Figure (spheres, helix red, strand yellow):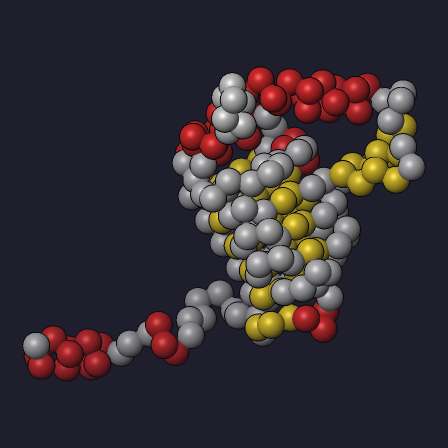
Length: 185
């Protein structure tokens, strides 16, 4: 919903959270305490404690991020997803009116380095955002789609959707090929 910056208690609490975040930094080095937990289950637990709904086998920020997740209570990340050095932004500030909406990252989705998912956006299962990709508010990345571009429009889809269980031919081998390869060694 929409919240006036100067009168909403949510906005005031969010500002307090942002003001306290520097306490996690190491004196003189500028490194965040959370950087020690990049890509680990501990980081997943941290964001769950802040209200994020995160599934199993999720990898968060193995290469870091700035910011990591600004409104974790509005983010859902399903099983097997990987969020690299990407931004999950659930807010929009327009002339002092703070608009908040949920974000959804489906199962086995990948957000590559410097990709950005804006408020109300949805990534359906097994979709991928390439490097330097922006998904605009309320946009939907279809199941199995690979998107690239800033912003990534429908015309910038770089791969066709895959169905569950599909693998590129290069990654699959038949039993005969495997048996032949073992006997030749």
